[in-house]
Length: 376
Image 1 (cartoon, rainbow, N blue to C red):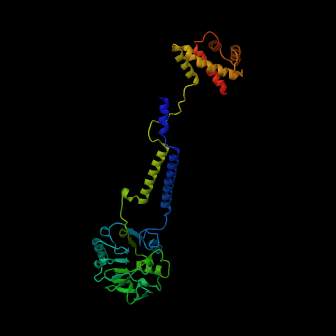
Image 2: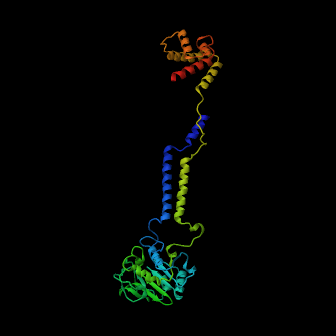
Image 3: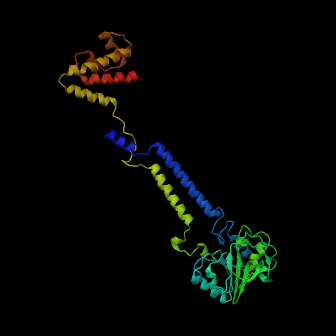
């Protein structure tokens, strides 16, 4: 039973290669969690949606938002739906590379312009632009080469040269071209109750080109006077309002998942698959003396004792002769004298050489004693 328990406890543990493999896996997962935590503290590598004021990658406009803040503008972001927000006509709204704008949001922007607001729209615009302007210009994926100032407007004060990626141009429409060529415009302005500024190519405001030529000066002119607040509409870049668990950043959820996986791997590496709990110490087999005495007791109860004892006595005498170095055929007197010198007890000697041949327990003890001495 003890041997079975020991075997079950042994097989329930993971093998050494498995423990090493799971340990390496746990170390890798832990390293990824640590790197994700450092990434969240340091901001990580540049990235983010195109033309988003949160984006620090080459095509983001985080640098433009920071430039406006350092120039005196109060910069903020709108992450919720435009139609549900309170829009102040005293501020400048910035919509860059929005792509699609819903009807309700477009109508809210139209009311904002009618109240005297200032709206900067950058990049390609779909049909939603028609809800803001009666005759909206057409956007084409063309390059405006060497744009020049076509009309003296405050937004272009001090602007002489611009560096662009050549990603768009305005043609036709009811907006006034103020920067570009005779065929196409890089910047058009539609005035009414407010000011609608249409920038065909947002690359001059992006992080990669903002510090070249007069791009930063153009960005400041488009925002208006320094006292005018600027709000970036970030809901069009995938950002939204969130509360509770939804407000936890996705990278933190990923870090939590990795941490949980690391804990599971650690438990598998340190724990057991199946079977009973391991005993605090290994069960050793009983001492040989107990075995010999039990065997002697069994032999003592059998009827043909002499036939059963003869092999045990012969083995005992052989060990005694080897221990005393008596040669091949020693006499009984020599063997008994050698047994006395070695330390056999009187009852053991009597069982081997005297009349008490039936004392098989004493013969067994003598055999056990000689066996232990021969192993030393």
